[in-house]
Picture 1: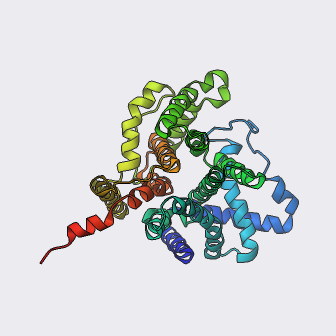
Picture 2: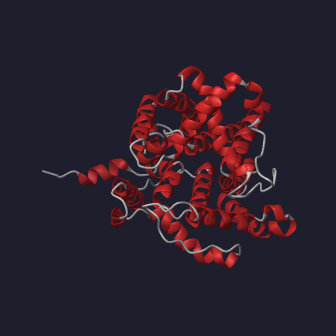
Picture 3: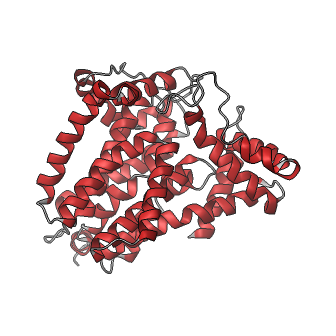
Length: 385
């Protein structure tokens, strides 16, 4: 599985290198080489420039989408990581792919291990949904933010699950969770925004043994109230405005071949409610087969999505009578749907939507695939002589 991720990461990069514009992963590589030479010649400056803001506003704009030290931090983390990798790879991109996948592979293993503790004897199903989903392995294996986010999510959920299962938490486990969530915040703050209420409801329902559905629904109602009113008390944490600004920042980027129209999001509840159906449609249902007209590269992604829709149909008609009702499963669904809703609000490019969506698919598809009665389905397909 690890070798497959490395091969996929190299293949993806090979494809990107033949594009007319320079993709982000190669920009990271280019900057990583510059930082590598700086590390060798001036280690003190290599450390110092990571903490220096080059903006007039200094370190303001914690949730800003442009012209902010914090907005640039995610890319700078990757660049610094690559500069360290270059010590051993001598600046070879494809060798750095190995180091990168070595790090993020822990996240996929962590997600797999949590599901394997819930779905006993479902190893093949879980390997397929935690490692081998086409868009997941394709986009998470390339040097970019997505794989790192997936790794951090995996580390966080694994340690939370084990702590809840053992009904105790060690200092080391608490540090792992804190470091993972801190990393998510600095790389993609909106992912943490979706993670916290889902994790809080998960801990409440599992740790205090409250009714699962009631706990999650109640937690999300409270979370929604906080989301839309936090800015009244802490202007720096005006979360609706932060998400709306991210949409505007995406709109200002260079036009993409797979761009789609997006209704303007206003930082008020009414606008969020009105745009919710479009957001979920974009993040869950695109690309359509007709989107092939925008770019031929969307066709295999549309085919992949079609098979996931078939899995949903099989789940509806061939699900097991005894479906596992672990709180982690509900957490995964609430968390992933929340993130996909935010992605649908802010991202007006199908290609980017598919890449962002890929790392949350295991939380939706793994429970679905493990809950289908495949023997019953196969028996239906058998033709009796």
